[in-house]
Length: 267
Ligand code: FPP
Image 1 (tube, protein in one colour):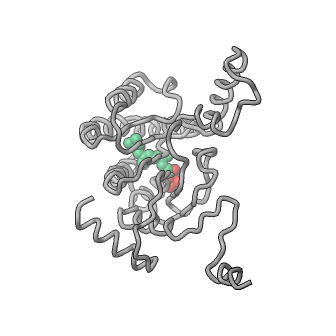
Image 2: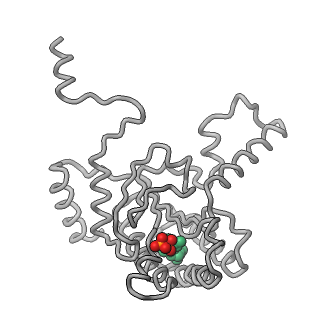
Image 3: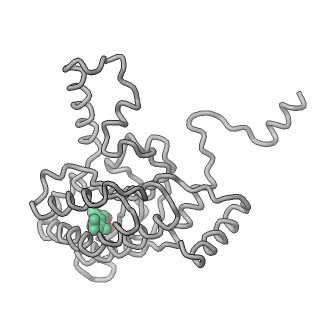
């Protein structure tokens, strides 16, 4: 992050939280980039131009996430259900993927970013499949930001795949059923080795998970900005991050207020 961005983030942090300490950032942010179609309609443009503008937002958000030193960013670019959209729209999204990797891969590599595609690449057209595999291969030894991009991704399908892999381990005698733990499931998801999602952002005012990282989002904090994805800015992203910093994460437990604690001490 450059000095100007850092100062802006700090000022926002202090204003929103009154906090003086280190901003508490999520380790893993997941984003459902929603509202491209509505943005295009609002500007009397074709839907593919909405997706193109959305890709510009995507570039900025990736850069900023990396600048902030966040460990993992998961983006929902194309779900298993998106194949049912009009063929011209599917074709436009497929082309955008190629354009995105052609223009970004060198910079991402330079920034030590690790690219991981969440989803079944085998159903994609050859050129998209080989481009995605190449991006993963080129960046697999990197040690910086985990950039996960959901393409032909569905969380239920991911869980079915994990169940089948674990069942195979049991069938071949490599694992006993009683040794299956929550960690075993995590270890068979695309995101294995990464922290669970801490913050989920879905733009455009919609409040659904839409089959995105169901297992990984178990304890995530949710933020639903009204802004359509192509209009979503780095400043608004910072506000979502600041909102996360203010949340009281209890993981099903209970945190005492200062007053409750003082009451107990006196008793
Ligand atoms: C949802 O908006 C968005 C999508 C289905 C696609 C998101 C993809 C990108 C922003 C870029 C493509 C990916 C890469 C890797 C470059 P919507 O069209 O459902 O919006 P609406 O609800 O307003 O119609």
